[in-house]
Image (cartoon, rainbow, N blue to C red):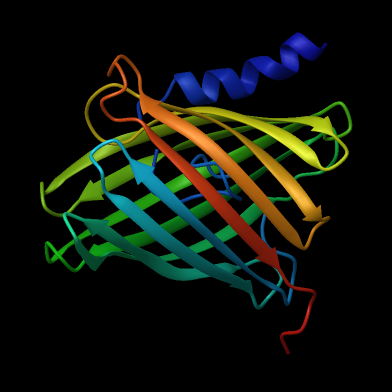
Length: 233
């Protein structure tokens, strides 16, 4: 029975071709079929150090005003060669078609845009996140299938991602994923997520690289996620 339930998410993930630049709950790149709680907000922030000696500082605030529509607006500043500038400005909307339940599955829709002020270009993307819960939420699989329109290239790429959350302890999770953005080999990422205050304050750390790149495109990241109680009107 368990094997059959794993088959659908695997087919969804590997039957596609490539992943959009949107993010799920830190530290995953592959998005999940979940939203911030109704009338609540969160802020996801992280620092990513790249192999090329550049450092990215990200902050993505999100709010759920209606109960089934999560809006995100944020971006990144990047330090490279002694210069720091805004390199990404992201806006996204996300909704659910079916809510994820314990030992069940959920699916949603998301779309957004990322502007690159330094290069004066803009990308657009959309995707379908699907999540599958096993063993009373101790293992959750996430798949993404979508498309990314790269403004600078004037080309559209199919996108995909596959991620797993596995509970190691009461407040600690192991994150593993593989995803593809644009052309070239897929990327992989491995990390840990730990709740300092359950459902309110989370820290995480990851290591990632492109498959077969011998470490040339590797990165490490450290993140902080803060969630609020319901307070919006």
